[in-house]
Image 1 (spheres, one colour):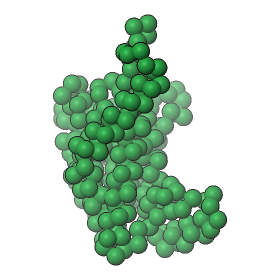
Image 2 (cartoon, one colour):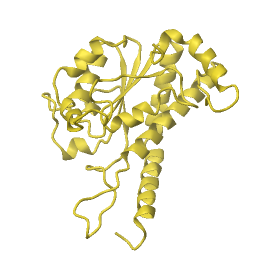
Image 3 (tube, helix red, strand yellow):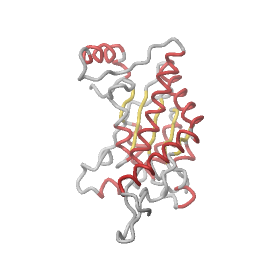
Image 4 (cartoon, helix red, strand yellow):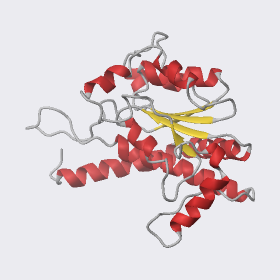
Length: 251
């Protein structure tokens, strides 16, 4: 490491990653936003899934001021966050064969919908199986992952494949294997993960593209406003009533 303070070094690393995403994933972001706009226009529903800390980026899309009202969280009990006790149970559940199929078969997803699957490594059974099964149901799948893991780690799915192998579109977060940006001689492990910062920004770029694409087509994007600005609650109530059959976080 250089003589700069770790805080500055981490922020610089995150900014560098964001620049890479902006420059290298521009076409994929446009394609993903267009896919979601197509889904909205055709009457489909939008869902996002992530396990463990990858769930943070998925949750950031749901019921979000400035975000699309139609984005729903696909929740898998025990893997949504670190609130499960003991916390390592969530990691173990990501490796259970059959769990994703059971969740999808009991979920509202149907052909014509779109599903964002967020998994940093993309190597565990849960995201791989979820992508495979969702596509078999006729759902369009966008995978958000670090492609580097596929060449530097071993898949934990029986097929030996990764999330990226079962998607209609893949967004590469560029995060290095291990998700830690900093090292110090007197610290025994690398530290300072950037995956949440980068993945959330990447997905918000996709949402911005979706909204702008719908507007370009002459369609009002179903956006939510902050409840902390005057008129926000009334605005959101009208949007959610209009799209009540495509919003599942109200029930």
